[in-house]
Amino acid sequence: MTFVQLIECRTSRLDEMNRLMDQWVEQTRGKRTATHSVVAKDRADASHIVEIVEFPSYEEAMRNSGLPETDRIFQEMVALCDETPTFTDLDVVRDEQLNAATARRFFELAPGRGDAPPFNDVFVEDYHDHDPANVQDVIGLDAVRREVEVWRGGFDFSFTIEDQLAQGDRVCTRWTWRGHHKGEFLGIPPTGKDVTMTGTTIHRCTPDGKIAEGWWQYDRLGLMQQLGALDPLEL
Image 1 (cartoon, rainbow, N blue to C red):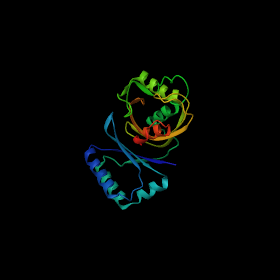
Image 2: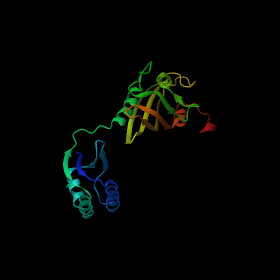
Image 3: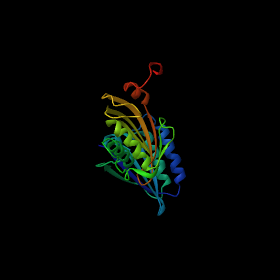
Image 4: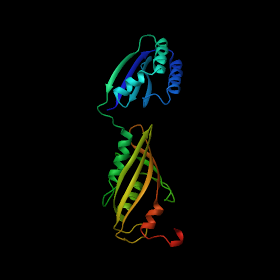
């Protein structure tokens, strides 16, 4: 279970504290067990600073605290504070990465038959899609739905999410696509073949959690080869 430590203090010397944290990051490289750290300033009280540090477990947090570099930096941090920092130890009982959840929802909704779903809770109205297989970028919700319906018309398909990484407003998803070629696709008559391809998609999300932009890279050439749509000279 993930463990989070909240460190709260009051200081008017935030720049010096940030430099101190840079020193700790450098000096504990290869030793520290912290996986994520966020320093935040209270908008209503600029002297109120909160640091949120994430660890794989409570035991790893204690091991991190036992590092001599951590102890030394902490003593220097206390000297920069107007009062002694307070610590709150938290066991994480739910950890939802909302942007990643939105990206996963698209990969769940895209497969199916017939008309594409509205996607109103997934994309912004002027969503911008970058797909190197298309001559022009796809822009707008209606265009996205038409694109999805092309794939739905040609295949019964599904996505398997292999890996997903989220940082800031970006979500990167590595996926495997599997389909059964049931209908015409880009002028190719239905072959009845079971086909597969792999790819990676990067999505940019808005502050309210919808997807505003997407970049695709996938093995479309391999798909065409499996469908028998390539001249041997093109292989």
